[in-house]
Image (cartoon, rainbow over all chains, first blue to last red; front, side, top):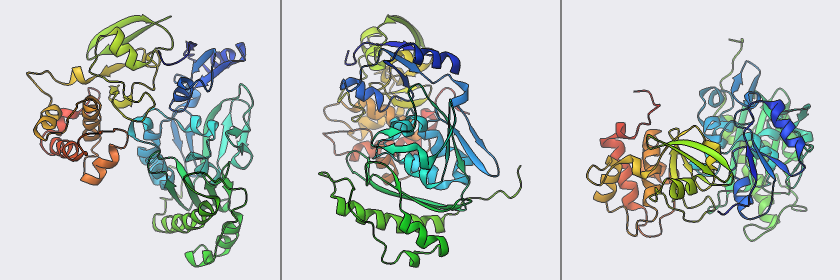
Amino acid sequence: MSVPDFAYRRPATLAEALDLLRSDPEARALAGGQTLIPALKQRMTRPSILVDLQSIPEMRGIEVDADRVSIGAMTPHAVTATDPRIRAAIPALAAMAARVSHPQVRNLGTMGGSIANNDPAADYPAAVLGLGAEIETTRRRIAADDFFLGLFTTALEPGELVLRIHFPRPDNCGYVKFANPASGYVTTGAFVARGPAGVRVAINGAGPVVFRFTDAEARLAGDFTPAALDGLSLPAAGLNSDIHASAAYRARLAAVGTRRALAIALAQPPEQIKESA
Amino acid sequence: MIEVTIAVNGIEQRHQVEDRTLLVEFLRDQCGLTGTNIGCDTTQCGCCTVHVDGRAIKSCTLFAAQVDGAEVVTIEGLGQPENLHPMQAAFRRHHALQCGYCTSGMIMQGVDIVRRGRAVDEATIRHELEGNFCRCTGYQGIVEAIAEVARTAPESCKASGDAA
């Protein structure tokens, strides 16, 4: 047995799940488990109760209409990667999901689990922030700009769960990541989107938390072309530096990634639905 | 303790286990099915790959309780020594194993790759094998075996729930 003991529960309703999480300060939610279970094995966390969210209806399913794509928190990456409606509406999000970790993990790991964990080297925070998504929780709706607060830190309060992520459908979107070749985690990534909220550029992996590249956004707002990014650079101050990449290299990757993500955004436009089906 | 019932290779397995029991521990210790190996125990090597409801997962990174009520297929459910599954036969033909430790996971993942129609070319197969490590073969025989099954016997990789 490589995992310390805990009590497993699989509630069928959201109310029951929230009651279980309230019942004990050491209770924790279990989504896909692909980060949490390795962390349990390393004794990085010692929950008393694991509340498995797999059966909760509010966290499941994908809804697509003319304006938005709504993805249940418990949707595995493999489903996000292959769902034809997501691929049509937000191709960069499907392509991102198809490159998270490796196939076995993609069958279990979930979008809600990933954004609630907010690993700086995770993929989804870039899409959520870059597309200006809204996170629906058990208590409120949180704009992406207010959700990702710091290293492994989000606006979620104790006992608050992500139910769904609502993405506005973009006119253009592209994502590029420079992944660590051994782990697959993001060294630096860039998500570029143009849509109802204007042009947004999100950088992940480079800093302690995903952030918007405001200089790139300002340049692209008036001129959504590669030429607008000539001479673009990101200050290295405050970026992560480790054995894989220095802060200066990550800053460089952010600028190069933004340019490449823009090229994808221009080359692979989403399908647009003019009238609601 | 918790009672967990899983249909493993078509046989109902009902056992009282500790809540923290991993699926790979359930398969090896409760069911006596030791074809599924524990390699790294850190979600990297893929030796513990099995199919849950037709999808390849790593059984070291999933609690048995999470798949209570599900169907699991392990290497023992794929073929028999006298009647190998086409993927097993292809691995033998292409010398796709040496020490054999990664092989059950490689074969389970290979079947999953073909099932999803992802054995389209060598580069894609290698990409799909990112979660399975082999420290002996250099992967060449493994990739060739998977590509051959995709060409010659793709229907053998369908899961029970798949459309005909």
